[in-house]
Length: 122
Image 1 (tube, one colour):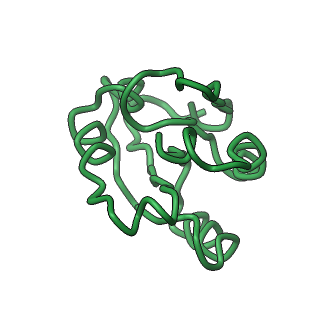
Image 2 (spheres, one colour; image 1 turned 45 degrees about the horizontal axis):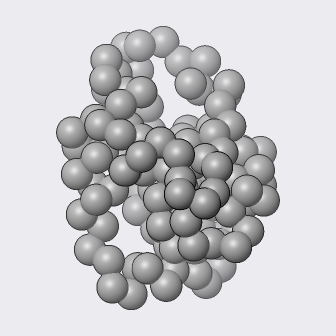
């Protein structure tokens, strides 16, 4: 676990199909305001190191996030609501990162329960 003086390095993972039409406004607003999925950092310094989608070579993208020192990946709210393998993906990512299973909006989804896996850095 990190102390409260060190900035937490964060990345946001969004759904590929959503990325085709989404500006990222909801995720970014929540990040910069430290609200909703990011309120856990209210008293912490944070650094946004990546904002990427689930398409293409996801394992490669995750390896680049690890190389960049990312500690926590927020799986965006659109992933929670519309990505069929959401829980499995969170568990996969949690091998190398702490994972917060949403970015903005309600902490619990309408049809899918939010999955958070922490303990490495948070």
